[in-house]
Length: 228
Picture 1 (spheres, rainbow, N blue to C red):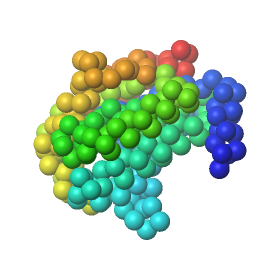
Picture 2: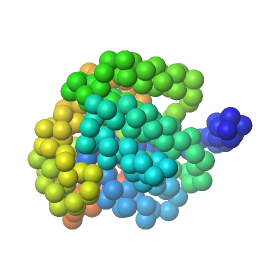
Picture 3: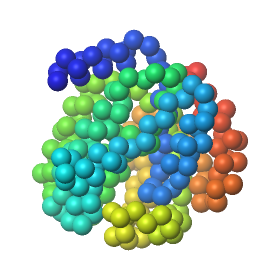
């Protein structure tokens, strides 16, 4: 296991590749954005490993967390941190990688929200923080650009109801409002946590046609990350 892990670190250090993270609330349009850029040559797209979060040797920690965050928040977020780290360290075959979220938003948004809402005990929060600090201190996790799909919680809530994912049926508007506030503090006000990369903000309350127009309009700015 260790030799495999070390191998990933060596391969990532061989050749500089651009990494772009698509960030935003639940149902902000991240999947649509990734699908749009996946049609561009020389871009590798990585979605969040949700299938892994739904099935860990037959268990569904994502579903359990939404049902009982006080009990299962630490379980899910420990696994999210591991799987997102694996995403960051996996071999990049194309010159540009575009990722859905990052290990940074896992900590600064979702772990932070569990703690602030009193659904994660302080000891769990401290342990996850120690792990995160060790990872980011000892392992190089380069990010060249964050694309923030800025979406109102109300729009996200409407989209959630339309797409009908099983685990998301229990998500209230208040949860989306909390996630939105944390994203705004991190990426807009820049008051809550360090930024690992420059931020490009794209307003994302619009319909599909308008969003595709915005993606095309910002294509050069986004792909310019490969030149940084």
